[in-house]
Amino acid sequence: MPIERYIGLMSGTSMDGIDVVLINCKEDVINLEASHSLKYSDDLISRLETLIANPHAIDLDELGQLDVLVANSFAQATNELLHNEELEHSDITAIGSHGQTIRHGADKKIPFTHQIGDPSVIAALTNITTIADFRRKDIALGGQGAPLVPAFHQAVFADKIKDRVVVNIGGISNISVLQKNGDITGHDCGPGNTLMDLWAQEHIGMPFDHSGAWASMGEVELNLLIQFLTDDYFKKTPPKSTGRENFNLKWLNSYLSSFEELDPVDVQATLCELSAQCIARDINKEIQAKNLELEKTFICGGGAYNKTLIKRIEDLIPSEVVLTNELGISVDWVEAMAFAWMAKQTLEKKKSNEPQVTGASRKAILGGIYHP
Image (tube, rainbow, N blue to C red; front, side):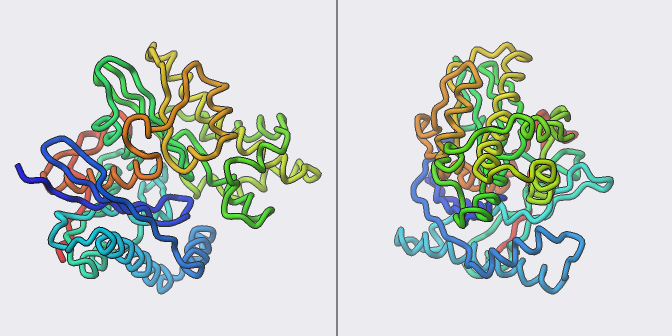
C-alpha cells in the first residue's frame, strides 16, 4: 500500500496563528513529516476580534470578506509548507481544514456552529482537494460538534494496558479519557488560555503571558475564583462544549465589577487558577466515576508552555503531568494533525466523530469535499 500525505490546518479560539502539518500514512500508521506556522496579519486579527466581540452587529459584507481572507491565509500557509519541503501539490492527497471559529452555538434553541475560511478558495489556491466543515454534521445529528479531537487521540494515544487522559489546552481546554478497555469520553472543560491571553493583552501589552510568569507574580483572589466557578457552564454535565461566545472579556468584567481594587496581576493569577481548577476538577471526576488507574496525564496545545498552569494542574490531580511529546507528537501539532487525519477518514468514507463524546445520535462521516 503506497504512502499517502495529508495536510492539516488549524487555527483555534486564541487566533494566535495557523498551524500547518504534513502527515504521511501507511495503513493505520500516522507520522508527522513536517510542520509550519503562519501568523494572521494584524489587520486580519483586528477584524476577526471585532467580528467575534460584536455578534449582534454583523456586517454581511465584512463576514463574506473575512471568509475569503482567512482562506487566503490558510492557502498561503499550505503553499509555504510545500515550498519549504520541496513538494508539489500533486504529492498531497488532501487538506483537512478546521477553519476559524467565529461562533459556536451548540446549545442554542436552533443549534449551530460557524467556522470561516472558504474551502473552495483553499482548494483553488493550493490545487489540492480540501475537506472542511467537520463540525456541522455532528450538530445536525444532535451533537455538540465539539470536541472532535478525542477520536484522533484515541487513534494515536490509546493504550490497551493503561488508562490515559489527554488534555488539550488551547483557548478552551478539553479532555479525552482513553480507557484501556477501549472506551472513550471527553468534553470541553472551560477556559484554557483565552481569558489569560485577553487579560495579558489588555494590561501588559503582550499577546500572552509567557510561561505563566506574570500569573506567578500574583496572588489568587479566592472569592473571585469562587464567583467564576458559579458560572452555569461548570454545572453542566457532558456532553458539553463552549467557546469565546461564553468566556470573553465581557464575561470577565461582569465579575470584576465587584473587585475593582484588585491588582491586574492578581486577576491573572486567579484566571490561571480558574483554568487549572476547571481541568483538574473534571479529571478527578472522571477518575472517580470510571475508577481510572491513571499514572500520567498528557498535555498538548499552547497551554502546555504555561509552567504556572501546568504545575497547578499537577498539584490538583493524583497523576504525573507530562507532555504528549512523550508519546511521540509535539504539543504544538496535535490538533492540526487531528484534522489531517479527519480528512483521510472522510476520503475513505470512515466515521470520525464519537457520539459518547459529543452526544450525536450516531457516528458519521464528517466534512465536505471540495475539489480544486
